[in-house]
Image (cartoon, helix red, strand yellow):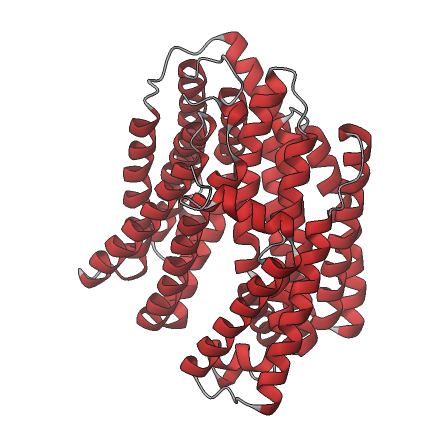
Amino acid sequence: MKKTDSLSIGREAFLSLFSKVLTAGTGFAGVVIFANLLGDVGWGKYRTVLAAAFVLTQVPSGIGAAVKKRVSEVGVEPGSFFGTALLAHLAFSLVVAGAYVLLEPYAVDYFGTRELAVGVVLVVVSLGLFNIANKLYAGTGHPAVSSWVDGIRSLLTIALQLLFYWLGFEAFGLVLGLAIATVGTAVLAAVLSRVLPARPTKRVAERIYDFARWSVPTSMLSNFYSSADVLIIQAFVGPASVAYYSVSIQLAQPGAMFATTIGNVLNVKSSGVDSVGGDVRFDLINSISYAGLIAIPVFFGAAAMPKELVTTLFGSDFANTPVLVVVGMTLFQIGNAYRHPFEAVLQGTDRPELVFRVNSFIVLLHLPAAVALGSVYGLVGVVASTVAAEVVRHAVFQYVAHREFGGVVFTRPMLEQTVAGAVMFALVWSVLEYAVSITGWVSLLLVVGFGAVAYFAALLGLSSHFRETVRNTVPGLSGE
């Protein structure tokens, strides 16, 4: 095991970022390929299987989060935690399989075929195993490499899905490819961790339970929160608006990638530091300072060319996507990016109940507001509620930081990134207004590339902190 209390958050996050880009790119390619191959009905069946499985996998995912927390504590032997988690997952998998046997006629009728109904069980078993094994590996001091294991899983998944589709398995082939790739990479994560499952003990089971009793409902709550907007929009304004919402949030998704990598590393490091009585505020400040590094320019870029982005990436059918929805969802992603470090450090310092309470409060605030605004203003009203909920969540987390970690966390780099984003917006808007028209993928990529260069050039010029961070983070620039 590596010493988790001395991890470099910057280096680990930098190394993880490229794996997140790989995973996101592979996932996007999979959507484009298989949505065209399967058509709307076949693709819908596959997504329905995943939706059902993802709800159930929040249980092993929460157990995995507990294992990651415990094994990242300095001086802990991980074998017994691994063994206990595997036993718990086996028990849960048997419950899911038993439920399928009892409800088989209803499951087959709902999912369309027996194979797809069984596919839910396969995904729950395989993904639960992967969550436990890969989170164990991250917790032993390897958060960056564990993210690359997930990237390998994405590549292997799409390769096997193409193979099984070619063999004639249709939508079930995608489920089968996902399950096999997930089991294979779970084994890879376990081998890389060099941790052998050991006999569970009562003390280890209690320590996992103490954390999992909060992390499991938090995972389920997050899954519900991410699905609620779609259900509300469908109820009030129908599937076309759901499509507009979905493409807008997909455009905003890259903004969360860097924040996710920072949160993953901070979770492991803060656990190690806290386990030896250290202070985590310095790491929280540094993490918050750069959580919005990508989300901020994504927001300003979407504000500069919302229609061009949507129609070029997703086609003319999405030309009616409201500008306020595109801009609103990228603004939401800024708040979502800052959420990750707060949650990571609270979980890393053994305060998962605070994460659950904050998120429960936000859900209870958001749902009635989204229903009320959605019934009057439709899609734009639901998005307005979502953005407002993230603003409130950030304020609540700032209060928690003041109470638990010695003060609120607003830093100069956050302001400098915002100024650099505004500079990028002005330059991109000027180029589109007076020099270039976006007519396809090539011109869009050129403008996006120009905007990225403008943003990072402005940030390098404005921020001495960013320049120092780049020197200390990027291999070969530190002079070591």
